[in-house]
Length: 390
Ligand SMILES: Cc1ncc(COP(=O)(O)O)c(C=O)c1O
Figure 1 (spheres, rainbow, N blue to C red):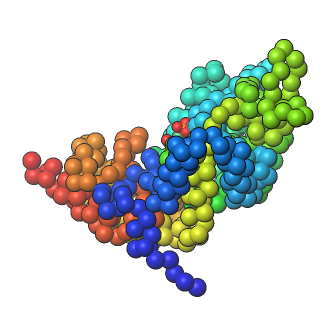
Figure 2 (tube, rainbow, N blue to C red):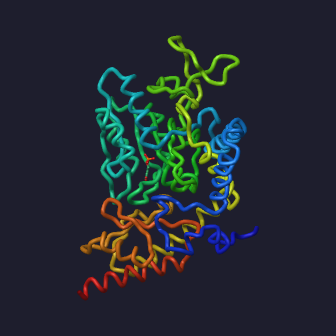
Figure 3 (cartoon, helix red, strand yellow):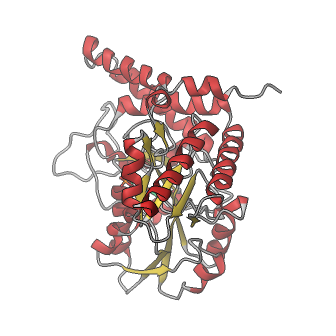
């Protein structure tokens, strides 16, 4: 079997020539092939306007099909929403409309706020599981569920620690308890596998600008058929409505209409067609390398990063002892030194990391190499030494 030429892959990402980039958990840079597709699509708009609209629409449907295949879903259950926050807001409103008696949602205390603000804003009671060394043992999650709990909302991978949850085991337990399972895969998918059937996921979201390599194109929004049947959509737009025969969109006024049974109902209106077409190219690019290959490479790089960080006076806060809980994100603390100053220091040297919940977050990607990690760790070392010498 041919092994992947990672040096060649690196050449697909000009960012790697310009800076030392460990901020893919914020936004992945576009590989050349995705940039070319975006340019091609906008050039088409520039030179032919809307002439290819129907064709583009069909191509976008093929992209949906491809993504649906990757998560073992039916294409009719997969759509897009403007962002994860809007998708979660739709859920919050759906539940408020449905449940007449008090209810609560269980979630994790270190979730990205797009998993909490939409529910809190609607006045929904949230019960947050406190972390154990930044991980969330399933027993602990289950112990917070009570008779009023309707759903569990979790990230597949936590944005500020990199902890990756065992979604399949959690999904099995929730199914036994008849609790809706809402998974935000933004920091994991498509690098780490998703199977909505096997994992008993009712709703899956994934904002694509991180590990989808697409730029800001919105969030993938999977809903099970049962979910849509149980919870009528609390919002609708012209594209949510099932058209009459011989129309391609609904134009009636003051008459009864019904929404698509499928996830199409959540598209609501015009969406980022050019971006979705580019997502098709991004998925082809990644699956061409192979997701298992990519995961192995990420593990290789994070192994090296963990080894190098372990020789420095820093504290790795990510749960890195179990491979099953690891991801592309490794976070560390500098004990009593100010992390924001370290991040600025690194940035002045062309090394991009980020500060999340007070930790320095390093996310590695397929274009990174050991030399990038050496550069980062050497700079952190110098920062610490210089700080103490001051
Ligand atoms: C886990 C997670 N979910 C969602 C988002 C983004 O949310 P939204 O799509 O609402 O901008 C981020 C980061 O930006 C994230 O880390």
